[in-house]
Length: 89
Ligand SMILES: [Zn+2]
Image (cartoon, rainbow, N blue to C red; front, side):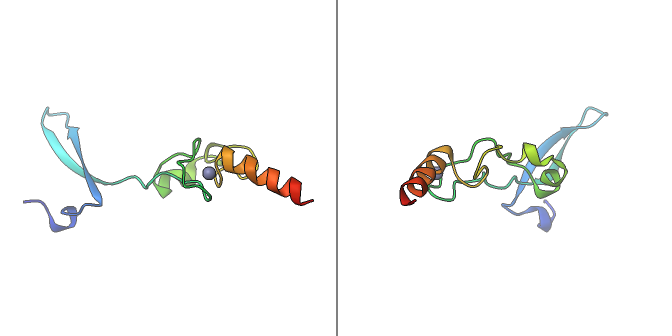
C-alpha cells in the first residue's frame, strides 16, 4: 500500500528505472493548469506550464510573449482592446 501522503489526486506517478534494472514508482506534483486569456479564456501561447520552482529560474523573456498585454491577453483580445481604445480617443 502506498503511503497516505501519496494517495492524492494532486500527485502523479512517474516510473523511474534504477541503475539495478528495477522500475520504481516516484510521486511528483502535477503541473499547474495552462495560462488563460484574461478576457476570453483561451489558452495563452508562449507561456510555459511549469511548477513555480522552475518558473522562478526561467528568464522573464521566456515566461511571456514580448508584446503589450503579453501573458495576460491573447492576440485577438489585445487587438480588439487597442481598437476600442483608439476609437474612444
Ligand atoms: Zn482572449
